[in-house]
Image (cartoon, rainbow, N blue to C red; front, top):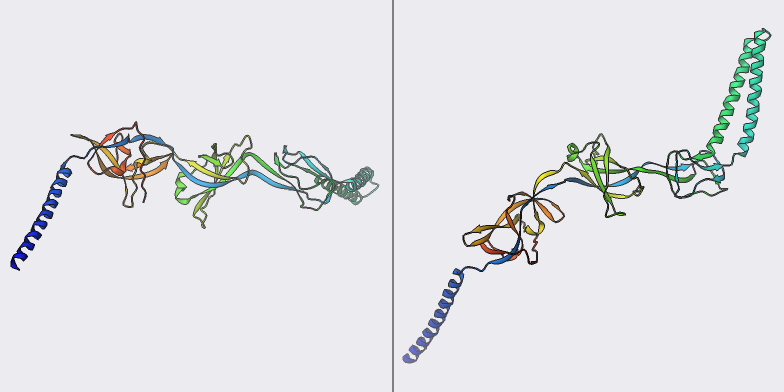
Length: 365
């Protein structure tokens, strides 16, 4: 029994010894491999560049006509003539529509006759006054009748003039809303009239930008109707106060709009132009690794055995057309990895090869 137990223990010892020996051999082999230098990783790189960036204050706004009205009538009557077409461009004072004035013309003739009679009576009495045939009160009465006839005549002429509807200013007409022969009540809408050249854009900016805004400052706008074009103008007016509801400053800019392509009511993306900054450090956006604890890049440094990378924390700023402003952490001319970051660690040897296209790695929190 004892001999059997010894044999079992001996066999178990041999098995455990063999296992421990194998593990020790593997550990030694891994240590040797770990001590061997890592092969360099191929990456793409670029230098930190110095650029001049034009800065803007972005906002959204609406286009507004410099002048815009709905043409109406002040007097009632039937439409006797229409002198415009929908969508037509007109000059200031152009005749748009006439309302029937036959009754008023007849009344006007009677008022002209009454005034002529009052004028003759006044002149006759003035002559009689010189010969002291009548009193001064008779002459005064004749003068008042003449003035009353003149006033009534002018009032009737004014009514007739209001039956000739004209354009208050030059601009573009909209869609006609009345027809020939239609009876119009006072205030009836006839046609919209908008002045499109120049045109305004109204927008707002937060009050913290008040010291950066002034009349005459340049603005740029883009509209969805012409996505590839930028229209320029200048700030024309600022509200004197800040809107207490939104804590924003209301601004109006003016654009020339010579071809009348911009129309009132359009939605516009507005950029207020600020002074340019001539020394901005920038990198491609693919060079930045974004993490919750901060942004970083891999900087390539020359070592004794060749180029190696070191991770460096940086502070980023504005992003524009795929490039990122570097506020802190890098200097102009430093080489930074722009592709292949996933395979890198601190002090990793690298080979820079910008002739191959590597999959860019952009990680965000």
